[in-house]
Image (cartoon, rainbow, N blue to C red; front, side):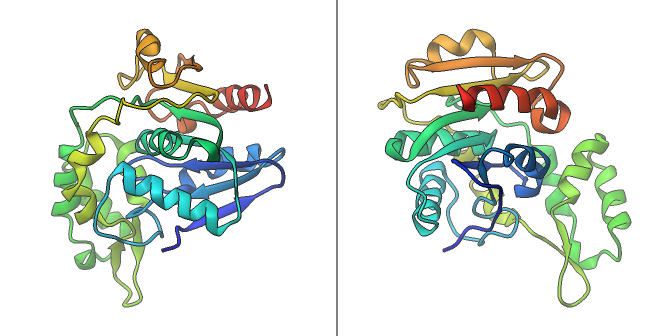
Length: 254
């Protein structure tokens, strides 16, 4: 099984993992800027983007996918950056394969369990039958009846692609992601620690991660630091890319 990826630049490797419903293209702009000093590998996680559609979707499996990816590319150590679901994959990977991680960056997520909140999105996506729409405009109009936020609709629409028959299909494995959604929300194990340098970056307008959680994070990641991008919400890389780039560049160079 080979994960889909794009590679830019030269230097010490950085691997970047996207979040739920996302794909590697979400990080292309930041990835290219980081590639001025690093080899940057943007990866589609299983059941997302153009990576294989597979049964099973949990953090142990996604960490194993990443280990196989690094092994197949002859990468023996890398900085790992992950956002949201990708951040949880990055944390699981650091706990499972600490020798393969140089520095760890987790963007707006913690290792704790989350209550959800994507149910309306799932309802809308599952109600849409992409093979029966004639245009992207028709598909977005359908989603607009169920999802008010235009930015979220545009983000989700990146998953819609033409198939060989001329119709549309989802790039992601929507049914598997929905089936294993509870596994995406669950907490990571707290019986191990990762002692490497770790940075948590939170959005000031996001409720996913709070500044006062740093002490509890250090029980699993003893060297954890935290930075807040005050003007950003959960999608920091899209809402405040320049501020995030400065934070990442400083941390990776230190």
